[in-house]
Length: 150
Ligand SMILES: [Zn+2]
Image (tube, rainbow, N blue to C red; front, side, top):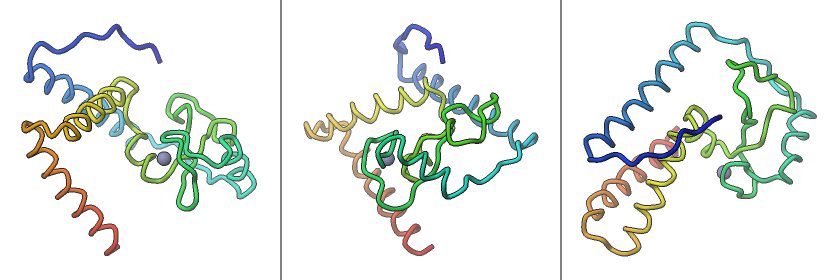
């Protein structure tokens, strides 16, 4: 994936528009894929073992050790010709893969940078992110509750 030289949005409005554009592109792509689905083949236990061994049992997204639920994440999407065999997969935590899988590189990098910046502001107890952090914790509590009740 070729990344364009970075330009920083001039305003919050421009930033919001940029993030919206990424999201719209991603959703349109997903809709197209839904209309023309590529038949998926499940990996065998042996193939999954091969995929997990590639990273020594670690998630390729966060680098954490994989102890339980994990998914074989495609390196090259099936929609752009990625093959459905062990060579095209890397292991990922289910959570990491669910957060990552359909973002473009650009959108993912923007989210990562934003997350790191917000994290720093939270550590610094910057007043402007207090409301964001509070809402985020409420959201996470609700998410965890939904997960437990499933
Ligand atoms: Zn992970």
